[in-house]
Length: 282
Image (cartoon, rainbow, N blue to C red; front, side):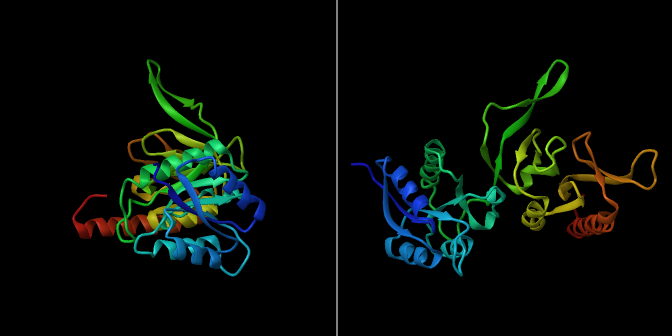
């Protein structure tokens, strides 16, 4: 007999709630034990049924949002896994503090749902409690993944065949974020190991707010950098009025906007002072 995963659906749109329930009915190891149309009722359903997994709409009508409910769930002694569901691309950047196992965009696709359930099944093999969690990751939706491959002529960029993916990254895996030159309404997330996630929806302000606690700083209207990967701040060659930062282990330099220069200098000085106090190099 297949051991079933107990699921609660929290979704304020009746049609979306019914659609998700119908899709889940095709999986023999899934049992929907409760449904709710708002966060308050969702909290009651979670308490009543002790589910393994909660599908949670981020944006719902009412005094309490989906993220408010996620906070309460994560304070539980043994919290269920969370899958966030939303129709808003800007929500593809989700703070690690909510600990989602996966992230689904509306309209729901059966293949994407199956992928999310696979993540849950794997995650359930790792016991956790509210105090013992895997390191927080940030869910970033993207159109393509641009990787660097080596050939005889040197590194070349290649777009992967996988489209409309979701990457789950630790903040330290991100080197910098910038607006796309080809598509100004999209972003690029450049990775420490090379390559980038491109055609990323969302705003610089959203990334700035989420990543600031992890040592990231806005240095230009089009750039956010991971400060731990800044090697030096200098004037641009041949121009004493323009500044750039050089990145560690890279030939890449990023421009620094004049209005961001003072805050960057302050942040770098603070990091240097901390390293000196701890007796380590910066």
